[in-house]
Image (cartoon, rainbow, N blue to C red; front, side):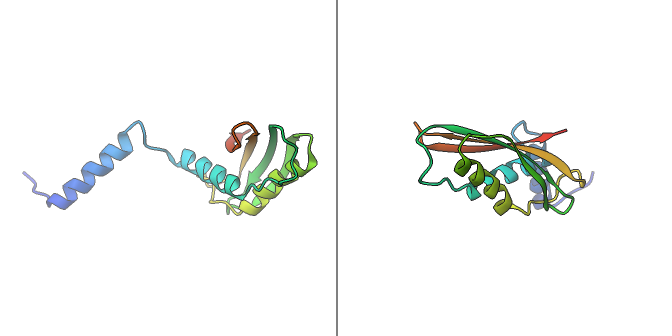
Amino acid sequence: MIRLPISLLIVFAVNFVFCNSGNAMNETDLFLQHVSSAVQQAWKLSSTSEPKSHKVQLRFSVQEDGKLNHLRMTESSSLSVNDMAALKAVQNASPFPSPPSGKACRLQADFEYDVASDTKQVKCEFRE
């Protein structure tokens, strides 16, 4: 029988539970969460925005080294000040971490602002 120090057994048990739990996030989920969070923190809405809810959709690439490339708008809010705020948020949040695949990837970012609840959200996902 092999005897292992208790500290090694505890580390193994914690790693096993974390890596095999349904709540553990994989590398891809962590990457998307990091990008979404960084962009949302950089998103500054203008106080002159019209008092209505709006959505903006952007697509962009993240290079192997995390640099931003090919940023473009695919859905406008119809208010240029809000559209520009979303574009600037992605620009200001970059560079991002390297994509989990180690290769460049294309992302879509959906920006949503709800006036009634005064909440804003950015959700990023991979695009082909």
